[in-house]
Image 1: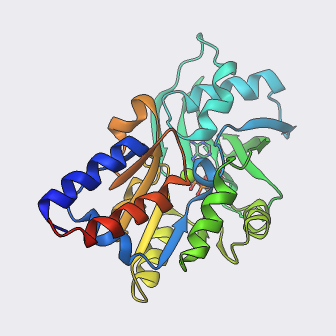
Image 2: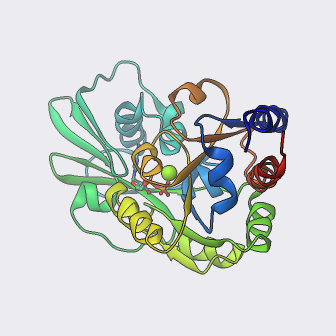
Length: 274
Ligand code: ADP
Ligand code: MG
């Protein structure tokens, strides 16, 4: 594409709510053969609600929620928002650490506590039926919280547009629940990978990139290392989160279906001869 064509194309994309942040995107977009989606916050809204709490030791329900909320405060993961209403301002956490794609740890009332996936908290990993978060204190499991999420309204349209364009589609999720395969089935995406660490997601992208050009869709914040490894990265964005987002392309207003428009504009841009 000529510089003039790129200027025009960028203006059209901006009007559609597609922010392009790297040079070379107009050349890369038409070549994409395989699109890989993260699940939570990407295919789904990432507005999780607590559907069940199982208590397994001495903490009460309100205590367990306050412990989780305390550990999660400051985290930008969609899971963290579900616990925000339970923050108890008198509870302090020291030595807080975040392990991307796993969870968080910290010291509360002198006890080493952890919140996150079963693998992270408990060192075991069973397939659950929905997104699940575990809490432990001093290695003792205290609670298991099940969360529900909803598919974004534009997801089905975006998936069918990309299929029509001939793209191969995959889901790469850190979630280890049967929800991941169920979502794939519902959307018509057969290639589904669950329970992946950020490293596992990267390895999968690398493997796909040996076959062709890959675009990775993520939330842009928790998935930053995975997005950085893809030929092209796309994230949904709105508000303040945009500045923290490192993706090549950001779809404003969280509209997943705009990606197909981006590919079309890029193809046209390539054909414009000054
Ligand atoms: P996805 O690929 O579906 O977006 P992630 O890779 O972000 O999922 O997270 C994978 C799993 O790790 C979650 O299902 C959850 O169990 C755990 N996890 C990640 N981040 C957090 C967090 N901030 N709080 C609690 N659990 C977390
Ligand atoms: Mg995610």
